[in-house]
Length: 594
Image (cartoon, rainbow, N blue to C red):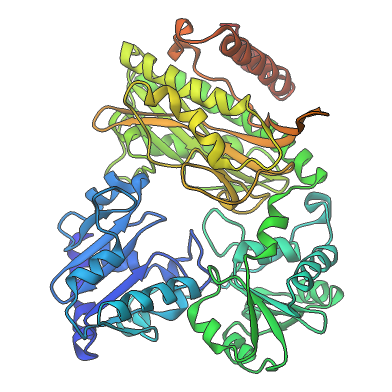
């Protein structure tokens, strides 16, 4: 990979020199500001060799750097070897940010160029301000990929889209569009432009196969009281889809006509745009009045209805049963020396695939054995996959897409002979995980106000993890969604009933092992007090036992022991109807009281 990326980097620099561009920023996203993108837009991967979901490359004539977050520090340091790129750490005290690096490394009058389709209005405005403040010039019309990635670039995907039936979605597309336009009107706008793929899929009750692990399709959506338009390549629709869209009064226009369409919108119209999602290029195409606001779709989508919630509960039962079979297979085969980390992923898909509602994994399984578990978002390859043996820790972070729900679970287990440090650290992580699950909090609480509950036991011993504790999860959609989260960074979004969020503290010791424990939790009503008001709490949705052999009972309080025992009792009761006698016996052993 490094030889190829060095050649690609040289091609990019040659084009920069020809156009007299001094620096280029290449994000790992697409024109829809997606986290996971179609291969067609993976220019950053092509030029650097880094494949993580978060990372931004900066290239000048004589230097190249890639900025990424703590989930990918180890992965990036490995993938960038001999690539010509240096790794930079995001959000780490003392480390230069991209903006700081630009300000100190580019000379007066230098031109910084980006592809405006790959930067949101907010991001482009911030870069332009940085350039102006530091005597630099900013250009947002550098269509980099078309200029340098001229050979071997994958085509834009043309997979067929399909209807996500209302029996799973719980609400019609017409109803959703009505609710969205109500929010648009409240904000003083006449229309809304939606570029986010998961928001479009949710709004229209449609799904696709254009992006790995996330059932979305490449498109844009414009909504107003007068007109509704889906911009999509015609090859992606069939007669049934066209009839469905006509029934919900949505017109179809070619994907590539979106810029021209926006440019023709009446100057008297006021359109709502989310400046963090709409690309700078399309934002500038509009000549009408604008209301900049967070997308109302994000908040509406985050609160699941009763049909979605009950569907997710059922999906968790089937998922838990599949994991029982996977972990039984692991116990039987890990010590043979015949299988590696990739085999674990393949077996996981095999067992999950036994459900008729399974539509694939919700992300690439992270199966990190021993030191690989310390790479937070480790992705095994044929070259890197470690062979499993009858000792050491194995961290498995996996999830599935079912028609009735999306799952995401992490379990760390010992394959044999756990050390005292492994047991101690596992129990610390478990204590933080349990603290989030049993939290009760007043209405209006934000995720940042709960985050320390998961970290305090690690902090007390001088340990920490740098990733967030929890992210929102979609319904047969993106496994990572907002607007809510649980992390140290402040987020004004409050937790509300119907929101599904992960609970996943961890600890990672480079070169040794990683430990993470993750369940999905649903915000539900808690107690009501005449004096103190209403409270919320969490219902644990995920159903699979913790590794009892890694729990130091002496480190747990009686309340925590009871919490684990009650959870394990529920796991057995909910999963056993899906299991045969041998599987029930295995699960009964794993869910015995501490």
